[in-house]
Length: 327
Image 1 (cartoon, helix red, strand yellow):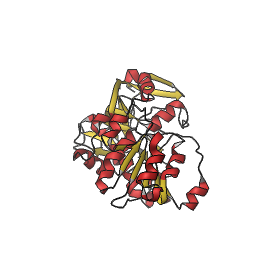
Image 2 (cartoon, one colour):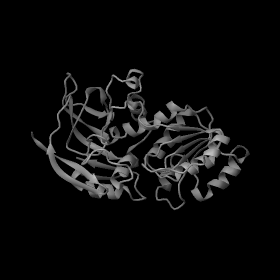
Image 3 (cartoon, helix red, strand yellow):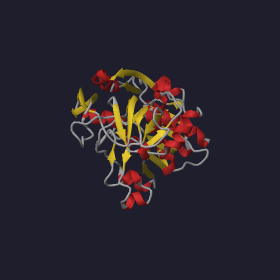
Image 4 (cartoon, one colour):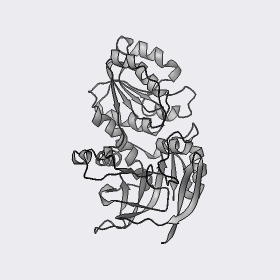
């Protein structure tokens, strides 16, 4: 088989660019751009256990189709969903393919997009009329939208977004579609992402959040809807402290660590705790295409595939939002 270059993750912080055989399958994609997401960082740090060694990471993908079993797709720019499900089990038959117990996740449990070429099943492919850097945001934005599919907010809700990374900043933009009341985003006061976060929501330094909650939320009891997107195990505790009774905590961090949770407070406050991940690509594509969500300003660094080690190390720095690799 023809060899290609790919980034291979062997273990914590052990990532190498090597030649591997070209993949084969239904749709072959020449990868144009791939984002490093929170899960990729957790795999790289070793807090999220590798299910395949070595693994080609990367699932926020855009590229052009090289070969496909249908006419009209070759040469088109596409992005791809990440869950390869069996299509036959109890979950798949009920429309819950992302929970198929036999699924493989591109870039997580099977090889992903940090390579020159990627092969995926036809059913996962979505043609997009977007530049490659924007198309790579479809997958994370779809995950944001799934938050509100799982737990639809009421009009006028007050939102608190914990964190100032990609998911947090995409969320801060998308919640505007729900005609919210207050939209607050928080991170440490010395966060280098403070200015960017302030473009999309009211920035309240984490050190002042308790005071803001007491003064600005009903009876000082907390926010209607809290999105935990810190990427840190401490985020869960913070979310529960700042949600109001009978409010919603949406869990978005995939850091791979066990968190401590005040379970009694969860029960007494009657909080709805909702996890969500993969979401509707059609809605995400429309949100980017229509300008409801702007994504290119979130890209803080770009690297070639040969610079993948530097790309990952850079992505761990506090001043970075989204790092892209161009194979």
